[in-house]
Image 1 (cartoon, helix red, strand yellow):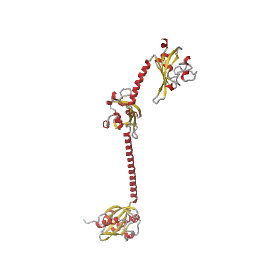
Image 2: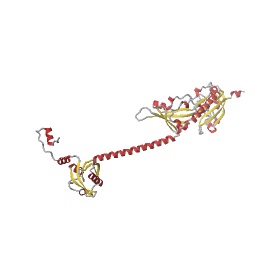
Image 3: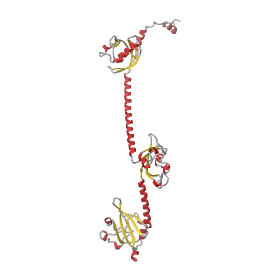
Image 4: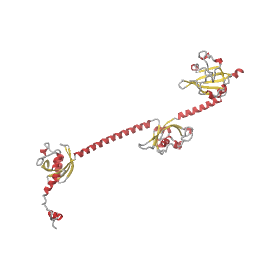
Length: 437
């Protein structure tokens, strides 16, 4: 079947009433197309010397090309004439020459170094030795890409710096964490130990490997309160801090068997993740206070024995006071000898109306005081004791009922560890029966 002409096809579609014009030449159509394209079009012939490309001859440029490149009056001129310094980019000439020689199309991006503008370039060869360039100015796009790339690099450097700072901070923290003489344990909300330092291992006498994954201070460690009662896991400071969100301070705990128990003072701080109101873990720090606890226990035992001795000394009066004369000790012997109850005397200065002086010793000439100075009946030696550390003498006391009792009194200064006087002790013995015998 013979092919229909364009005119026949036009009549078939539009009908015979439509006037059909002759088809314009293809060159004219292409010329009009190039003239109105938004992309720049440039047709040129490559000038070879042998096989070496040396120049280009402009054959055609459309308005968009002239606008985008800023070059005009190019047709019929060599690139070397338009650009006296020759082709702005030797690589571009060689690339165009390769398309003109092989007929293979090429697409690439090109920087015109003379103007600093970027172009997207598509090249094909309609006739051997000739090339058609279709170009678009992409300088703005490249600028934005460059800015984005620069910004990306700045962000990367910033992030890298922050990561380095964080790494250094973690290293400093880890160094501090490991070098502290205070035991530190981090426990998750389920009680599992997730971090521990060497001091904690030394204090609790357990290795780092044994700590790994341990669900808290296990019952096998027999944790106890100061009074020896069991210390339930839910009452451990870390668990209380996690459950309540409140720090726990100075909680005393004993771990281990009674004969070889380690005592620790624990403080626990709840740890929160940003934006989460519930703690995810707790950091506990603790000190080994075993020596202090044992010293306190020993002191308590001594105090208990001491108080037992004082309570059983019903025939000897023992009275203690601080530097201001406030009575701090009034044993049963003193109550029996002088007739006052402890409640009447403790916490008070022993004034004359409570323990009046005996008239026989009121002058107290030998005690280093001025003649005629009244005595309080219990501590007439306050000025003399600091000179000799103790004072002993026979004195006459008045009981609460007004009767008299002759006694020997020995008053001793009580000194602190640095030697300063903190108070006085008086030991009083009734000698009435001795004299009557």
